[in-house]
Image (cartoon, rainbow, N blue to C red; front, side):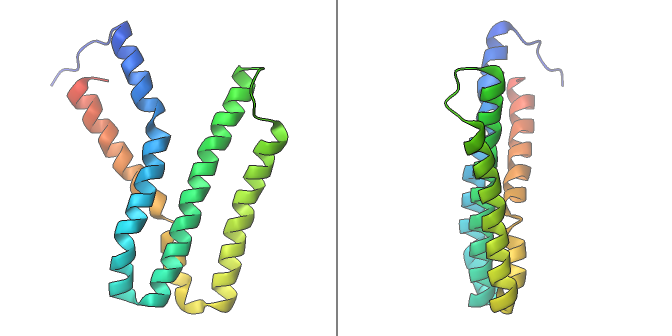
Length: 145
């Protein structure tokens, strides 16, 4: 199978397609978490499912904030007129890890039955990343982007 040569128009379409990847990954993370929550409840019980839900929610928020921080940092580097301040980027960066640390502390110290679910929930964005990789491969082979 040969991949067609790209033109300037294809380049713009590819740029638009790939620039939307972080949004698709965030959406895929939330969808993966919502689809896997009933499975976790059915298979491992309410405590593990609650831990999974907390881990998945923190992981999804973490990835969303990470994507925004990278966009903000790139905007500050490329564009001097950016609305993002260095202080807000660093504050969001630290808040992400504070929330994950707080969630882990609560789970590990006060609710040991939910520990495994919490750790698996933190991996939910990995499923979304894999889905995005396969989707990009499909689009690249199908459309030649």
